[in-house]
Length: 499
Ligand code: NAD
Image (tube, rainbow, N blue to C red; front, side, top):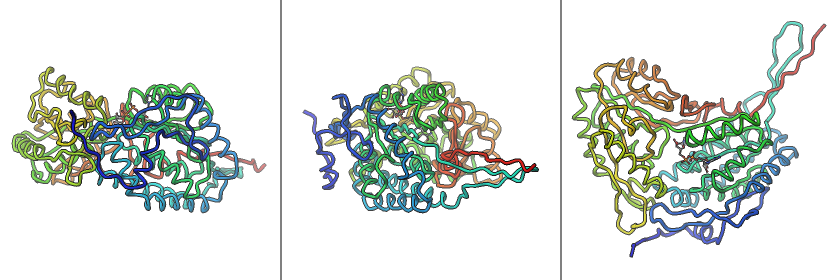
């Protein structure tokens, strides 16, 4: 029989998880929905059931959008003076901060995230809400236009009910990236969390009520992508949609929104490159890239999954990385000494292992074999070991997004060759360049055919720096920066001829 252990739960987390069934959240109330179906949330570290969550129907989703639309039309939120609205958002940030440990444990258990990383995600949510609440108060709603013969200006208004569809890898952090600008601008929202990880979103919906956010401003519709998610992206009453997830589903969501002429922003997958020149500090660079590829078990859209290394240091670099990756401590995500937790689901583990097989079958060499990992006390958990592959960059494992702790290595001999290799991908999210020559770093970073070019670091995320994907990695961009706040306002031009 499998041995399993469950970490000690914080009292409020235990009470939350002990509920027989979790509903959605519509107009400030828990809603079990029209159907009886549920989706089971699993602790990826043990494979044990965590919670059962209502699988909301298309009718439930329509009710949530109607609630968000009615709240938008009321005077409860969209027409509040900006300082009052933003004061409420600051209260939300304060309440989330006060509940950080509970939320982090819920997120860690649900998503398989190392506890300290889940704590970081909750802190990032708080920062997102505060950043946009402060920013929105410094934007003048009117812009006077100096146009000959006219008295003219533009004025910004929130759009109305906005939809959000969120993936399972950063459920709470990405929720903050969306709620911050949308709510600060005065919109109301309907959020569809991923079926694997709905719990932190449901938990914070209640906290928002406690914080004084009016009912109907934040609505949550858990359920399956093909039904609940599709019902949301097809709803013609939405005024904007934001989708984060895979390119395959992003296309479907963009098609639905296109049919209804609803503006849509898509943040999609990636196959980022790290370009490593021969003048780097080998120790430091290997350590940082090992940390990046094992961070959240490699389930990070902007990760560096293609390591392009100058031929002069290639062999030494590989040795450094193999040694470090072999010693990464794999364990349950809530154990204090775990450095890498499980992947999110059995399906995701199959995906990772499948790519290793396909890569090798296609001629890639295994520099570090990877494979399924066993963790004592967690027999049912979805653990994988880090892996390194090398060979032709046309290999399927070098071209497609694996979403696990797997990097593919290639070697180059000149700067132009390195840039061409980095850019030879359908994706365009984030690449990094590693060198002690800052002029070269700047040149290479600017030449990347992607939304983010990082220097001597990877996964550089900060409020104020626009984060974006191009090509198969997305459309819309500007995330985490003032640009996104402006996306959540529509603008009307007012003009009066003077003669
Ligand atoms: P996914 O596309 O399978 O699912 C994302 C969301 O879409 C989930 O909530 C899912 O329920 C919903 N969905 C599924 N089918 C749907 C449909 N037909 N209509 C409407 N909604 C539907 O992605 P995932 O596996 O949850 O997440 C991993 C992907 O997300 C990776 O490709 C990753 O790179 C990407 N991602 C991108 C970013 C970014 O900022 N660019 C951030 C995080 C994750």
